[in-house]
Length: 573
Image (cartoon, rainbow, N blue to C red; front, side, top):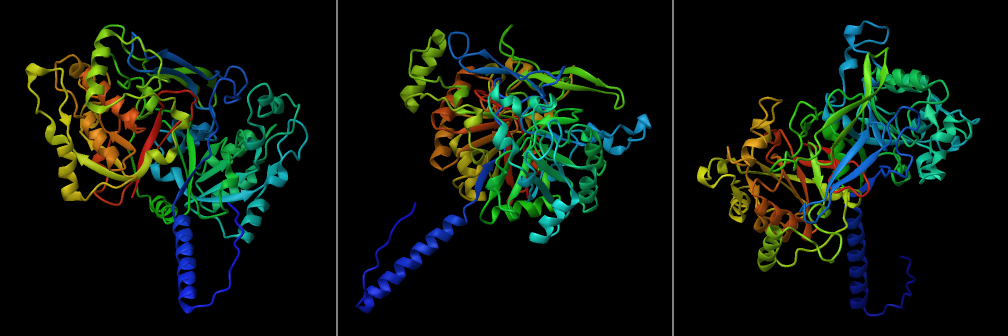
């Protein structure tokens, strides 16, 4: 806001002192505000009417199916996704171009096994070095890409500093900002280039990749649709970088929000087994001390991966209570075979809450105050809930609208494993309930929870029971069927308490935050949603998080109108 300030003559010394004090206070307030970290989203919106997938045959089109909506058959909004790793803002890893070592081909090597589920989490982040190549935008013939060459990086280095290990070199052309639009206008993003109706997107050539590889840079990004220049340098450029073990972001956006250096940049995405690429969520943090802290963590390889691998062999989605109540299982969908790599390009058909995922408020809340024809049993639960906790509330807050800073913060791990074994078998199916007293006991020893912290309940359930078939019944089925105790889960009273403490995000290394009692689970989710809180479920390795100094990062894939959201969680320390 611009304001005109008219200065009056100062006479008495007291007036001078008061005026000086006011100026000092104003300056300190401005400096303090500048020290607050700011999160910047660099991800393209994924929706059917956007050019979010590679348009060539036989790449699959993105699809979202609202499998269940809140009503007589379901108390929740449940979605199914058909999504390919080349969708929206995405991650490439070495096996995209490096063949497996046993194939003994010219481009074979150990990095041919570095799939999305094998990349170490420290490599996903680093210091953003924004190389400005806006002068190249549209400066090429139709169907061809303007080339980013080593001299463009050298120009950046002359203006700022040499690039190095720990940096994320980002090529800013503003291509996606300008051309990522709903179809048919959005054909200009990829399709018109492939059809030679428009100039291509700016991209580095193989020499530029060699230059960066020799500098030790292992993470790149571009706001172009791909890191591969058209028409004939896509594969040479990919291999030139990926052979060094690089990973990179394709389809970033909003890079103009970043300073040339100093911001923390990160791309997180679902941990698909054997994935040569994957859909992801890119973001950065600008301002204050937090970026430098996270950059140093990545540079020193201090990172913990909290997401289990997504595999069709594992029980990653809710099997339901009763026949026909299961959610979409996680399936690998092969669509294009690469003979050289001896590998199928593939996408996935899966529940939007497969593996590590987001729980937005709209998961359990209807969109408006209209009459909801709940099943009679659920109507009774709602009446009971509202007598104790107030109105259930409504929400249209789907995954793409949840700010990324809601799901990031200081990691506060509350060990609730002593609750395991505390229920009576005669009461099963039942989950031990995490109460306010458990949280307060933690605070007495570890310090009070603070606004912006991420509370993580350590149950040990995923680490103990996530196993491939036929040894998979202990995770979901036996607890839901009353053959084993359920996992510890917070009740609605804990949600209310944590909201009062300024907590926005609650996470767990259990299959979900609700537990196996459907009545109590629904009340927990109503309490979360009604207070505009979010959950992150299905974590692993929580025991690796240090008691202090860990920073939790989670981001869900930016799918419009999604009531869940697959993603990946890490901790930097």
